[in-house]
Image (cartoon, rainbow, N blue to C red; front, side):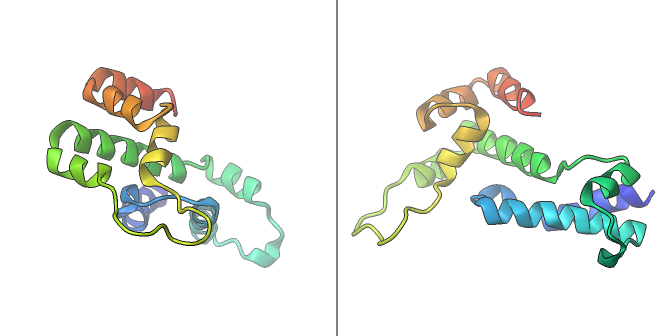
Length: 143
């Protein structure tokens, strides 16, 4: 009962709007930490008890799935945008004028989504998204 409440209420609030942003190494770590923290709170396990994260997941009889949920949401959202909203596609594909920023290039959302879907480039991902059955098959292979 409590597991379904956590999955439906807590995780839906935590993942709200997350499909539109990029995920770096730190963000992935924070999401995994939050998932473990939720299960520890549910079982009333303190950090000082010396119980590993793997033991917590065994007690709950769950696996780490929060990142998979986020990737599935991202996959379905970008597929919908590419198939149905030409205005948003123009915004996603648009280029910014002016000088490049100094330092390491930022993570690019479209490159990250294309990599998660198994496509080599944005144009290949766009072709996959236009074919709904092929797009769903690409998402199924990632689970």
